[in-house]
Image (cartoon, rainbow, N blue to C red; front, side, top):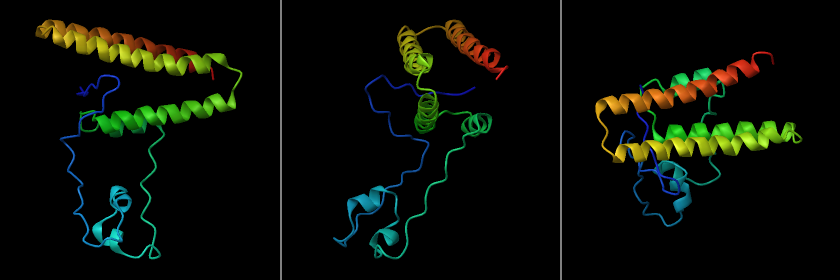
Length: 163
């Protein structure tokens, strides 16, 4: 399955140890701004004149959910960066839906409740881990939470099958 790195609400996620650091050497040229380096430009690109060319744009995220999840789970590890990107894209898409249907009050209700459910799951699992559960208890917790999420997914499938 996957390995999630839980982050308590209000805390910054730890740096990903599985990702190679992208630190840039500090330029000796005072005309290079920190902002240029923070945007991920290489030292050569950051020190070149601004009129040469714009930095390449990052690829757009995959918005086909099945393909996106296949990409995320390809290595069997859910990184904090992948988790946050998925969460952010979910919010962007849902915000577009709310703009198209501003009179649908259930839309405005569902999105924050999804965040509450995720936070409750995270806190429940963190609290559970503090008790140093047995392997059997861990399996039961994973199965129990998994069934709750499957129930939500089944509701989505059932309610949207007629769309």
